[in-house]
Image 1 (spheres, protein in one colour):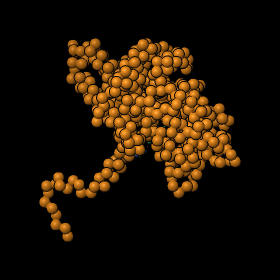
Image 2 (cartoon, helix red, strand yellow):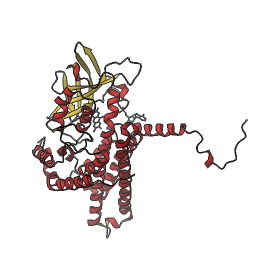
Image 3 (spheres, rainbow, N blue to C red):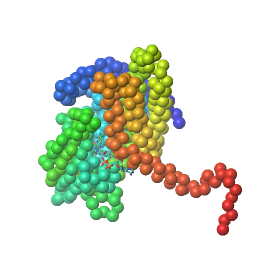
Image 4 (tube, protein in one colour):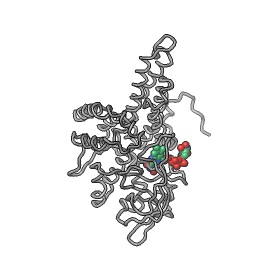
Length: 419
Ligand SMILES: Cc1cc2nc3c(=O)[nH]c(=O)nc-3n(C[C@H](O)[C@H](O)[C@H](O)COP(=O)(O)OP(=O)(O)OC[C@H]3O[C@@H](n4cnc5c(N)ncnc54)[C@H](O)[C@@H]3O)c2cc1C
């Protein structure tokens, strides 16, 4: 495995870091204050987006671009250190048009959209003129098993009519969110449970779409929203189906691979920031006659955090390289591994940093509570830990089943007589 950064990536890392230092980090307080005052989107977001675009720091996540589309054409491995740099500030990725769920939706349009769908939705998304949502999870069924979903997408003449209820739909309260990719069932009776689902494009202003509420996450209000939405006789034209009827599950698998790795890359950045804060606090504060870092418990927290971040980063880089080489399907075990490892690492390190900070650590005066909250949410979003552990174990067991008895030469117990 060679994780050396290419000259192109080194250059982008340097320019992105400079941009963060010059334009984003100095606005952290303003961002916080504007949100607190109810100003959303924050007043400087569009200016920063324009600046990032003009500096070529735009659509960094998308490996493949068509003629005329703006971006950097980086591999997942090249994108990883950049996402980590952006991850240090929770809202920064939007500035570079690299935030979820837009990135995953752009990948879907890119991979499966018709020319007309690309023109209408991919183009403005790539240009950062609109935002989008992805609607799969439902309140009434266990949605980590996507075969359970119940929202119906029924043919009616040349149209489809959608009925159902979704929740935790990120971004749906953003005023620029103009479109949603919805997963529902076009063929609920199909004997193949993975061919019942389809994905369809639903413009947010379609009659019958109602954003019922924006759900807070651990008492944290995200103005862009994690929304509950009802769909009552929502009618969209037949050409809004993506790829074809029955392709929903396949598209979901393709969409989630890169999306999961982007989250994990950003989580590494957030964990690094939590460790930086922990170390700096431990260096400046004294208790019982010693600096905090001179107490064994605190120095152990620092050491464990460093080891865990570096282990996690290596796993993320390996996964990124595998997606580049063998695609998201071939890298599915690694994708599940990072998804099960990194969010819990993020919460663990944020938790240690909060402890080192004392009471201030759980106040809004540091980013630690937000870093912890987002790590905790990620243990559910894009699939709960248990589902990923199950996937890893299944693949591991399958590999062992394919080579039965391969450990026997390692055993020194005398052979048993076969009856
Ligand atoms: C901040 C945030 C943002 C989100 N954004 C979106 C979005 O934009 N669009 C969207 O569609 N959804 C979104 N979600 C929803 C998320 O994808 C789902 O919550 C997740 O897939 C789990 O589904 P569920 O909530 O129905 O949990 P359930 O499926 O009901 O699972 C509940 C629990 O059961 C256990 N469990 C489930 N399966 C297994 C198993 N095989 N083995 C052992 N235990 C198991 C796990 O502990 C799991 O947490 C978001 C969630 C959060 C928290």
